[in-house]
Length: 66
Image (cartoon, rainbow, N blue to C red; front, side, top):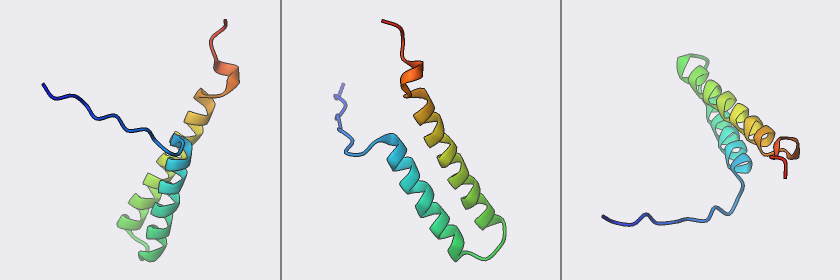
């Protein structure tokens, strides 16, 4: 069985999701109005929601009691 390669991320998950959402929004601006553009905008919205959820989950208010 082969071992899994470990990779240390250089940026946070929230930053990567925000950058991906911005890239998708830029792609959507290039397209004419229609289902393809709507699908890209929906993906960007989902990425932003995931970024907000990540911020919420990692907030100090939700840390376990010590």
